[in-house]
Length: 185
Image (cartoon, rainbow, N blue to C red; front, side, top):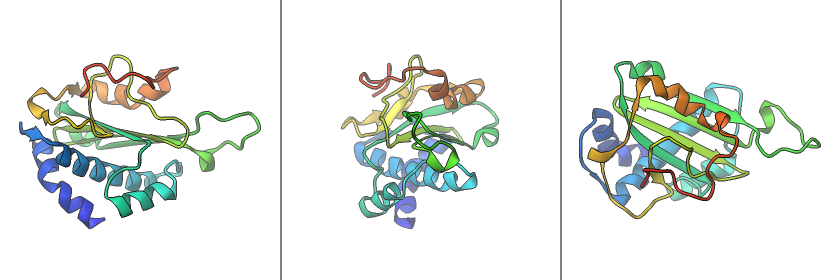
C-alpha cells in the first residue's frame, strides 16, 4: 500500500495546498487509488463495515479502485479543515424484509474527507452505482473520464456545506444513476 501512497504524493500535495495545475488521467488514477485506500482505512475507525474484502484485494492487486466506486473532488473553501478531516458512513441499501439488517450487513459506504484545500467524496456499493447528486458540483476523478482537468476550474465547497455534502445520499430519495453530475467532468 505504500506504493499507492508514494504515487499520489505529488498530485495530492498540490491539491492539498490549493495549487493550480493540469490533473491528467494518470494523476487522477493515482489520486483515486490513494483516496480509496484512505476510505478503506477510515472504515476501521467505527463499527460499520461496508467495503468488502474483495475491494481491498482489488486495490492491492490493481493499484486502482474497484469498478463500483465513484470518487469526486472539490476545492475546500474554509478555515477549519481539521474539523472536517473525515466522515464515514456505512449503510445497507436495497434490502428486502427477509434479509438480515444491522451494522454487520452494510453494502454501501460514503466517505467525505477534507485535507487542507482538498475535499474528497467517495461512494461505493455492492448494490448500485451512483454518478452524483442533484445540485452538487464536484469533479469526478473515478471512474476515469479520459479528460485532463485544470484544477483552476475545480468546483469549491464552502465550510458550511461539508456536512450537507456528506449527508447527500441520505437526503436524496433517488441518487443520479444514469446521468453525469451537473458541472462534473
